[in-house]
Amino acid sequence: MSDYSVSELKEFSKEELVSIILKDRQEMANLKERLGLMHAEKFGSKSETLGSMTEQITLYLNEIESEYDETKDDPEIEEQEDTETITYTRKKSKGKRTLDLSRFEKQIINYEMSEEELLAEFGEDGYKRLPDQVYSKLQMIPAHYYVEEHHVAVYASRKTDKIVRAAHPIQMLEKSIATPSMVAGIWNAKYTNGMPLNRIEQEYERLGVPVGRQTMCNWTITLGDRYISRVYDRMHRKLLEEPIIQADETHVKVINNSRDNEKSQMWVYRTGEYEKEHPIILYEYSAGRTGDVPRNFLQGFHGILESDGYQVYTSMDRDDPNITSACCWAHARRRFSDAVKAANNNGDKAAVVDSLAYRCLEKIALIYNRDEKLKVYSPEERKKRRQTLVKPKVEELFEWARSKADSAATELTREGFTYLLNHEKELKVFLDNGIVPIDNSATERAIRPFTVGRKNWMLIATESGARISAMLYSIVETCKANNIKIFEYFCHLLTELPKHENDSDTAFLDALLPWSPDIPDNCRMPEIPNKKSKKNKK
Image (tube, rainbow, N blue to C red; front, side, top):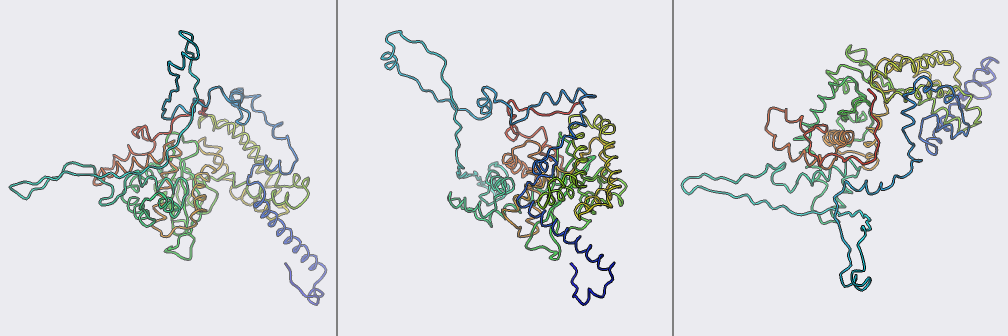
């Protein structure tokens, strides 16, 4: 804001005064917009979708629904829509509870009347038995701990100094009470459920288990470096062979950061959202946010890199001819969404609907609407339909944006147009390749468990802890994506990996990856009866 005295203002010409007033008004409008956005973010809906914001504005638009009806030209999509039922209107199927419980171990408890009781009730030969009345109850047994005391027979020769011990399993940590199930329980609590170690320690104290935080940290660092790193490196190699990688990053506070003047980062890379056979999600820790971090991690990758438009990612497109940069449409609409939220909080709701930001969101929502219908198709068919159904609307949006960008009235709307037009090339990549999702939301979902856990433990003590945490989060999120039970899988890894500790040939690692058919059945999530799954149409 301008800060002139009365005497100074008198020295300005009329035109200069008008310029100062207009500048101050614009700054006031920007401040008002920022305050409105802060209020909306704190108290309003976090959704960026047009439908959610339309409900907040309480004005309902039918333009998209009336303009776009792909079923007129594509009865297959209509068939797909007709076969689906919205969750909250679905009637509960008869016997569903029994089916849902059928995947659990069952213990049958019988309640019968004695012969004397039956005789008293019905008399001699006065009854017949009908089918039992059956009801189910789900019992839970709290954590149970017991000590395995291993006795290894030791034999000595009577004639020489030879001593032989009986064969016994290789232990992951010699001279330690740690077992695969013990460590897996700690990792599952921290990296799956977001519990800080001090809370796990308190729970152990209540149970009388003699394991402290320092011990848990030592186990995690040692076993992570010795064993988990091998699985992580194998998954990293597999990821680099994929045709598309989606990337994102978030900050993390590390107390002993080797680069104190920079924020530590946790980076996330995953296979494309449409990859269903063996999805991979990998975290990587770095002490800073420089471009060398993703460049080193993605060295040898040939394919499409989808991101939020951060310059570190997009510059790789220019530096490496083997990488094509794709940008996220969710980020393209984010500033417009913020502008609408701020304006909706501050002023006339009817004016909000007439704003450039809202009109741009309408056009982006239409693009999403059309692309959403194509998720059920194979990549080849999806690409073909994007060219005919989605591309015209994308071209129309950019033509409109170029004509309106200079007339944007608010700072957030101008930022939205700047992002949109500066990344036009990258935002259009998904149109020419059916394996590229329209946005990077899958990666943001993959990084969310870390950000949620971060609220509980706030910071990480050391860089080595951050690096091992990145590996363990990678295992957890990849297991989730492959429908693998995390606790059981950690137990499996910590049992099998010590057997190969000295193997120079690492081929055995392929059988230990979460999507391997060699993973034991007890590590696999059971299929829930009556649960419908969407499958791509070929």
